[in-house]
Image (spheres, rainbow, N blue to C red):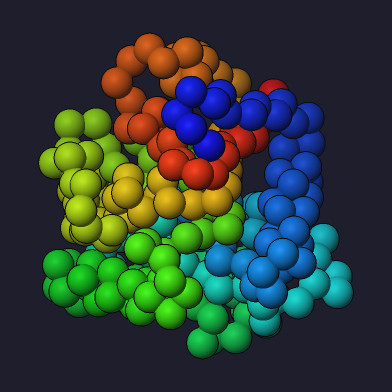
Length: 234
């Protein structure tokens, strides 16, 4: 979408069930159009429930046609309680039977810049085979923090200024502080970004972002040729 096209906002009553259904519809459409779906997962508590619901609703869906990436990761080993990969593995990857080769894990256990560059190279290799300047996600899931951050792009972070690299180390305000995150250029290469924002407390923040007031990182997610949908819990 061009940057003057407004995001779509959907207010959901049964947030987990309806969000999972919407995401699954978009994934099926990607597989039908291109033979596979490149899906970026978000960390946090909201996706934990949605992941489980995706598995429950996806009877007959070919998960072998899905390639999984992560919008960000904490710099911890994959078995650590704070690992986004571990949460995804327990709630989605293993229950759905997604092949290991389809899952691109960020190596939070190694030196952060090395992990970021390795991940960047892996995504670039796929993009190059497909003739893309940057890896294009079909469906990219993002959360929204109370401070307006998304992925691990926090207010005031130097990571907000990165316009060349696709994956970089970043520092967050809450432990574990060391993170690895996708950057705005990569996020904005997606075909469809879906924000998952459940809870009435986030509504004023969402309204500011949609109105273009306030300098929040999430407001800078504006795909160059894609669209944005906000799934909002009432």
